[in-house]
Image 1 (cartoon, rainbow, N blue to C red):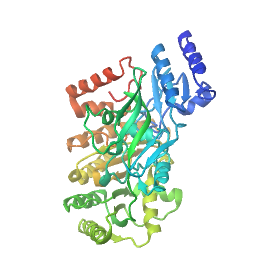
Image 2: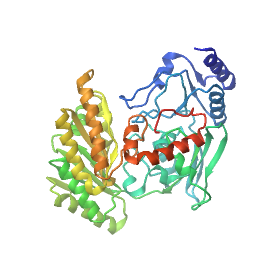
Image 3: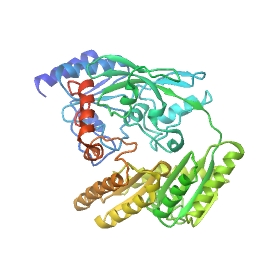
Length: 460
């Protein structure tokens, strides 16, 4: 280490409570990257496991004085490289900031630290008869801070929206080392620019979130589940388009293809891949007779699109198992080899054609592409799997990755629906928004992080 970096480590050690500074290389190794295996990463100078806003502010101010990059991370479940260390940075982990500070049943809100795990928050507020809808597939492990950083979505978001729709306000340590509060606690508010919304999805490049105020909903009634089996992803996509054309808004509409089903079966022996090439899972949480009618309408859409089998589930345990298989798809595929995860989002009407194009791209580049999708809102997750150590296959996979982005943009879509730009989607972002908008985004970055220390090299 240079004299300057040695001085920074000494300063952090003096400023922070015992146990928060980690400069042991072996421990720091686990903080070098998120789940985006193919994104580059460096070696951090040190890792800080903060427990309070004061800890975070001390770290930001120290990094400012020494002009050392600062990369903030939560549980490290991201899939775009947004939390990857840059060489010689300080990694600031919020994983130990796990307090639920307040739940207000009257205002239907809660205040939490960023290290609270998504599913833990859901379980906590359920005790008050409330519900936090955003539910990324990583909800058993991902943290609220990470969800805010990437504007995470999930299975319920086709009906209820993404993380940004539930963030009322937040406490942030800025790029100049100040602690500020953004947003509100009221149901309405248009006082000034929406800086809260700007922070959501900014991937740690504009500030460090230390506290979040979240909107909650009343607990919902049990859902009706409809499952359909299809011979191809295009046919399943036709069913998704039919659901949209029918004016239905299901509480979930998920697609899982044969590659994912086989991987889950090989791991958990659930017996799904013997019955279907593609499974489409729909749910509705509309209560009473209207919910029954909506479930019947979903079933009719599946059948009209050519489902080889479709039915309303009468067995809640079976229905839950199907959705559990959906959540297990990504970790099951990881067992086969390195996974390059796409995250494009396209108009619902374009879902069949883009799914068909993805299959063509797989054949053209001789790579295995498995498909899972939050199909109801057009958020597709093609998963490109290569054999471990096969560099030619890896090169072909990168070409396929780029062509999927081209296909999504050509269909009027976007390069990322919920995983964020991070490192993997920076070229795609530039292609999507163009030079003028990129200049606007860089101007925002310069204004809020004038020293350029916050997660440099990511997003813009």
